[in-house]
Length: 358
Image (cartoon, rainbow, N blue to C red; front, side, top):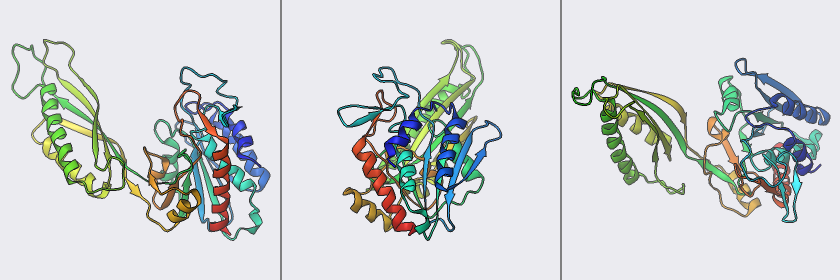
């Protein structure tokens, strides 16, 4: 079985923002049933969406993880996004072909081509939803206490290069309160905008201190960064605002060291100010330095490197590698994946199943 044949079927199912979530899970369940792999489907009671867990054998030595949802169609597509289209450049075009139905098709084909009865240890496969927006599917698994196998492959597109780490993510919403008056009669210390600006000035100075103190050598940007994503405050030029809301985003190299330092600085900077904050995402950094990294480096001929963003692999502990076929055209018009890299990735997954489960 070839990954491209499975990918054709997966691309044909429109899963933009989890549309047809049940339909794609039906297809995946039917696939596993035909090759003798057990399936469990779990439904989120609030949104009705499903995650699917496929498992084989006892004592699973490894697992695969990937999301079934895709982003929306970007303007400028030259082919039907829901028809996997091969071109003379050796690429397959289709929505999700790269991110990340391609990687999912590779592991499904790898399992189908493996003599399951020869395995001494088992494996698990996780098909999730809502990765592109809020990571709802992997949160369902983690919150339910899922015990993941010791070694996990997250099949995100990496251009067939092993990604062995990812920065942490800390996202915070700040709300500053003030007292509304006419701008000609302000009350000292009661402008929510002024208090927010003073706070941001402190945070920007603090960001520079974090850069100076960083000793990271793994990530491409070798220090924590802060982004001011949203500032919303005030309703008129001649009114002192009563509320200002700010969204901050930190990308953290070493969560264990940097996270408590950031929290303390924020608490100190807000002391005596009428303000509150809510942490909406707290995803730890990780770097995998296990012996298995060398196996992937040897099989791909590429050294392990950091992943550019956040994947579902950031949500659970253990030994994990992010690797899948490219080129990385995620979220682009005319999204595509290389036939050659599909075949290489499928072969790699087959090799890892043999190495860890046989």
